[in-house]
Image (tube, rainbow, N blue to C red; front, side, top):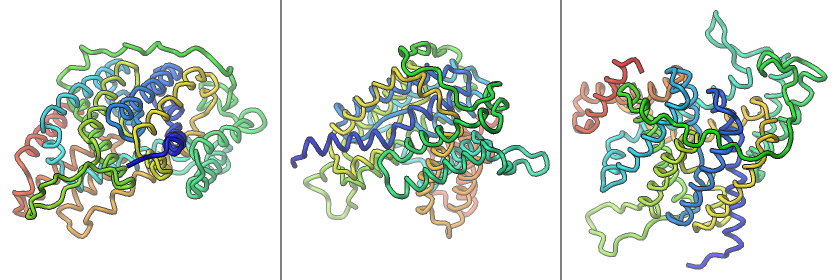
Length: 444
């Protein structure tokens, strides 16, 4: 089959425009741990470049790799803010998660583990992470605030910050629905411009902007890349027994993300490996996404590299389907997207202008994108629906991806055993349940 190089290049540009929001959103999330915005931005760009380049040249797939949404939320709000880990220890956990991911790539261990995870729980965890990201977006915009009477409530719509966020959210949503190329990044830019008057002509942002009255502050255009986070991971303290649930959570979340992405992208572009020539007639036809093993190995390398560079784990992006919809089918798509990330190494002062309320609409909408898998859950089968529901809601309600995964697994096992469906609880899942109980016992 022949492909047009022009089509592949244009598809690469389209995929980049669909994913470039991570250049701003990832540093805005991880900088809440105390890591420097410019350092995380440099790490984000480098990881996106190397990961996408490897995906294009080695795995030969048109898929962009970058720090994963959900994984960055877990890093910031569960590992660092929730458990009190230092960012350096959390980066060490990312590195060891990548090493574990690589080890699981040997032989059929990885596919065996994937087979142990009940499919409804995979869908529920993905959607639960989407709700979690949405909650973070609302919180960053101060749209959802704490309330001693009701736990949470919506902030006053008279607040200029809230009004600007709502306007940005609706505008970005319209752009997305109308399928405007680069809709999310356009929304971020326009929301930033709309936030410029806050603290200058109306309102005061000092309560949420480190004492600065103005919400948007210009500090320059260009600067040399900030490599301060390179090699800053703590490899020793991150190997403590108490942190293994964190490492496993990184691995499982990354694994769910990548498998879901590869399957979704394969379906969108018919990117499957050829079927065996001699397929037994009595066996179901199993179509495997193209070069799946190489693609998952690329994901594992990206996660390992993320810890070294100074960011949360890398993963394949479902937004790559935008480039595939433009006709992209080869690894050249990912190579083009990879190269387009590099110029942003030198734009950290300009990108640091963007306030949290400008990236918040992107977080809310990404959460909406991640809700689609719940339509595949059989809600009329309660022995599957209840564990899936618990995993789905406990991720945002507990502010912890780990807790959602743990209670999803444990409730699945207890309910299935109680109703006499022991055959739906493989021995390997019981081992995973044991790790879940250990995690609960250790308080994490």
